[in-house]
Amino acid sequence: MGNVLGPAARRAPRRGEPLGNPGSFDELHRQCKEVFPQQMEGVKLIVNKALSSHFQVTHTVHMSTLGPSNYHFNATYVGDRQLSPTEAFPTLVGDMDNCGSLNAQVLHLVAERIRTKAVFQTHQSKFMTWQFDGEYRGDDCTATLTLGNPDLLSESVIMVAHFLQSVTSRLVLGGEMVYHRRPGEEGAIVTLAGKYTALKWVATLNIGYGGAHASYYHKANEQVQVGVELEANTRLQDTTFAFGYQLNLPQANMVFRGLLDSNWCVGGVLEKKLPPLPVTLALGAFLNHWKNRFHCGFSVIVG
Image (cartoon, rainbow, N blue to C red; front, side, top):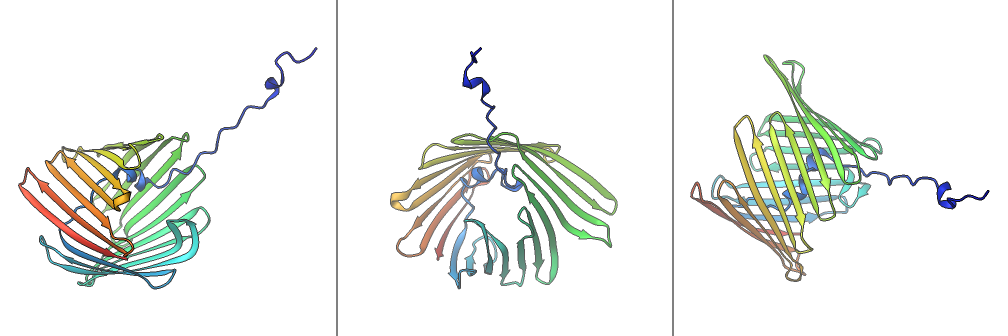
């Protein structure tokens, strides 16, 4: 007897497409946060200079109206092993200001899936922070362990563990555990996280004992992007809401970002590139109606 069902019955079931890596826990809300403008005040001049394909230096002069003016010197070294257009190893970054305070980072790829990072911060001649990170990136998961300010003599440490798992091609679930210990005090906080990525929008939620953080990002078209953030802190009994948007005008080489939040604060930053010169101008203004406080800023970026 012939096969009544035909060749379709003998066809093996199709395997699901492999899931992608979910990225790092700190970047869950990145797309939404990039829509919001960064606070600006005073006048800032930034000069970037590439000395070679691996070495770059940056000079930053900031004349502030709210605090003391300062100068920062930044040096960055990037190695030969490049995993993506934005990732290369090893990477060494150092930033020093006119007071002698140092902020240094070292990123190294120990193995194909294991990354390490060390962070050191000093305030003038005193060590303030030393932090060590280890991250494992699998095909569909990411696990990270961070040790902050470990001190064996005083038996104090801050430990942060992150884990993210791609459940489907659109859904990512994971969690965070923060553990701290010092003489006479010990505790831990657990936070659960979820992220859903659609074709034109991304929704993210972090919720735990300390509060909740929710964000929504939507890309209307190539010119308009919007983002909404909601943060609730149970310890401070405070909840904030913010709405941000970004307008891209490629023909005019301009980008405008604006925000409006529940603290009655409105603001915006306009960035303008001046091709063929390697110069970017930025003008920002922020007004807090509740505190009746206004400040504005202007920056010039060369290179």
